[in-house]
Amino acid sequence: MKVQSYLSFEGRCDEAIAFYKKALGAEVVQLMRYSDAPAGGPAGNPDAGCAGGMPGPDKVMHSVVRVGDTELMLSDGSCSGHAEFKGIMLSLTAHSDADARQWFDALADGGQVIQPLMPTFFTSNFGMLSDRFGVGWLMVVAPPAA
Picture (cartoon, rainbow, N blue to C red):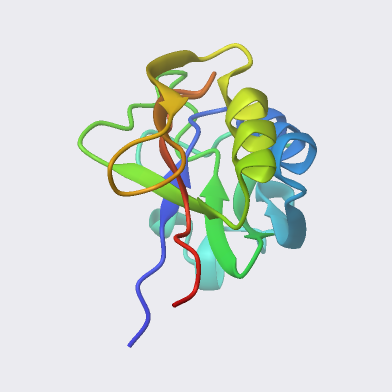
């Protein structure tokens, strides 16, 4: 079994992909736009389209980006313009304090720091933030191998 995160950016998916490429070195593995869907909705069924109507053809219907060893799925969703990422955070484990600082600062650009990156009793650096899209992130440095 595999559990993956699927984030709906409600119309800002292209912007999010570009941001994560720059901030984290994310790589686009797959990208499908609504214009790539067959005519008449999924499987040719016009009644099987998106709730509330079909987003613009240039919007992202589905994408997969790889961040390190993890794949995240991203979409424009229904393009409501109001993405909400409540009650969930993505945890990013760095192998060094330098990597943690670089990624933390990059993700915090345009976002909000919840807890500054700092040493704790359980790791050399830990911090929390909400990025410019409202996605919550936990940053932790992996403890040294025993």
